[in-house]
Amino acid sequence: MSGIATAVVGSAVVGAVVSNNASKRAAGAQTKAAQQGIDEQQRQFDAVRALLMPYVNAGTGTSGSLQAQQNLLGLGGADAQQQAIAGIQNSPMFSALAQQGETGILQNASATGGLRGGNVQGALAQFRPNLLNSLINQQYERLGGLTSLSQNAAAGVGNAGMMTGNNITNLYGQQGAAQAGSALAQGQTYANLAGTAGQLAGMYLGGGFGGTAPAVSPTGAGVVSGGSGLRGGFV
Image (cartoon, rainbow, N blue to C red):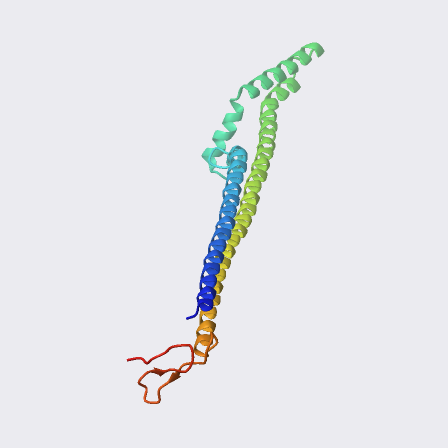
């Protein structure tokens, strides 16, 4: 092969190596950037979840507000309902309000001279049950507010999770595209190199490098002189 052909082949090989290395570096940079994005997305989601989990836990589980509401309604069983009501009835709040209310009834009756009247006794008998019923309703409403807060927090975690999942999926797609692009570029580089070698071989056999194409002996004994290409025969 002539010096020109050798130079062309060498240049093609060098170009292929440089192109291949550049493709690998580009794919590596894209893959690294995508992975950094994935890690940051996961970190942000973990931070959001950590912030919202106290609110989620306040409304869930066996000691959460939702279960407490169900217990007051009797949905958790008769024993759980009885314990929930007893907890309100035996609370310091109930005792304080009951004492204040009964004292007020007695003072009002004393001031009007009806301390021993039937109305006073009836009012005293009804006061504690009415107070307990009122406190049960208040407790249920307050628990409902906490349950709503927990529900919103749980929805926030869910939305953050879906958004993070979509973003990470897109970043994984970018990683795959970068690696696939690199593989295709490398394949094209090698194909171009092979094409260049094939063209040079055809030019050489066709006498394109300073002479006519070598002729093959009719007897198949070898190649006879036919130009400035190969001289002599194959043994």
